[in-house]
Image 1 (spheres, rainbow, N blue to C red):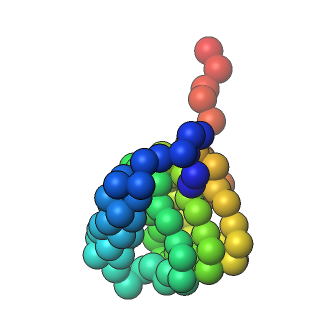
Image 2: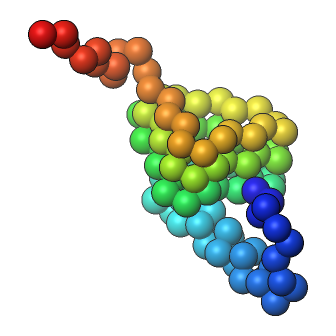
Length: 98
């Protein structure tokens, strides 16, 4: 994700390192359920609670506060906005009306 304004040159390596660490953390935590292509960036607070698998193609950017509780197969060249949730129909509980 690109910032709204240009960032100073000295911040670029720091941002790249933080993105690398975030991707590494997600790969370690979610392990074998996860298949990730090249150039995949995860935003802050991303949670992948897929029961069986999650597949991300090449050139995928995921915004902050992304949550999934479904099996995902995301292709290449995809942008997922911030505050997006993917919930399976069986997990959805409608709010009862009184």
